[in-house]
Structures are given as structure tokens and as C-alpha cells.
Length: 133
Ligand code: SF4
Ligand code: SF4
Image (cartoon, rainbow, N blue to C red; front, side, top):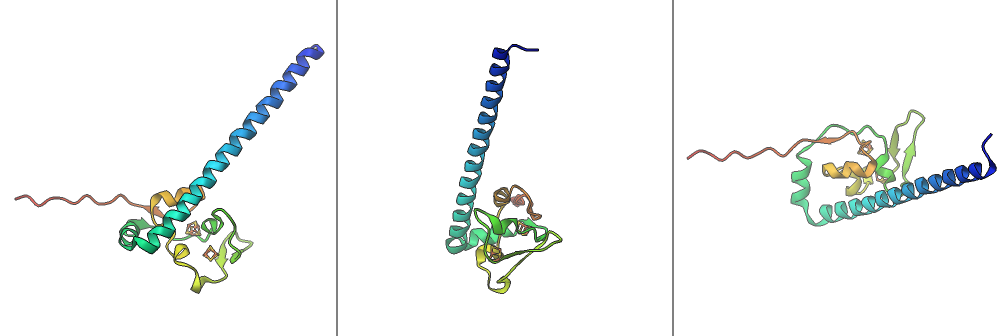
């Protein structure tokens, strides 16, 4: 059997490791939240003031919504979100939902705000070929 001093040292190490892991998770979580805030603000500005940019970005979007509802829980759970037993969701104000909901995701980086669970995807912007003279 290990002496009591070894057991205490091991227990202190394990406590410190757990504390470090918890701190790392807290920092990760704070970074993710900050990213979500940035994303929300970016989409707000894009939709209101940069329509052309939005139209161009959406032309590269492919796929369909799987109704996972993850985008309705960015930062907080929307009060209009309804979850169903089969894992899908519906919007309680679907016909009147804001443009920020209608247009999500606008560009590839938006998907990272829901940790990649969104089923939309984006293709690369086609390269314009110059006409040979
Ligand atoms: S209004 Fe509807 S679509 Fe928009 S976040 Fe809420 S539940 Fe989702
Ligand atoms: S995260 Fe993507 S797939 Fe899920 S509900 Fe929102 S738009 Fe649809």
C-alpha cells in the first residue's frame, strides 16, 4: 500500500488536473460564445446593409435544412422554437420569422456557430476566366 503522503500528492494532482480541465472548458465555452455573438452581429449587419454581399454568398449555398433547430439556439433558445420527439423542430412563427432566421446560414463560417450541425454547405466561388484576346 502507498504511504499516506503519496496518496495525498496523487489526490492533489488529480484535483489540479480536474481544475485545469474545467478551466480549459470554460475558456473554450467563452470563446465559442464570443464567436456566436460575432456571427449574430455580422449577419444582422449583412442583412440590413449589405444585401448584394448576402445575395452573392447565398448563391454558393447548397443543401437543405434538416430542421435540427441548432440555429434557433445560438446564444439562447428562441422562445418560438418547438422541439418534437423525433428530434426535429418547428418555428412557432414560421411565416413571420425574421430575415436573420430565413437566410441562415449566409456563408460557410456561419455553420461554425452551431458547431457544424447544420446540413447546408457551401461550394467554392467559381473562378472567372479571362477571355483570351
Ligand atoms: S423565430 Fe423561429 S426560425 Fe427564428 S430563431 Fe425563433 S424558432 Fe428559430
Ligand atoms: S442549423 Fe441549419 S439545418 Fe439546422 S435548422 Fe438551422 S438552417 Fe436548418
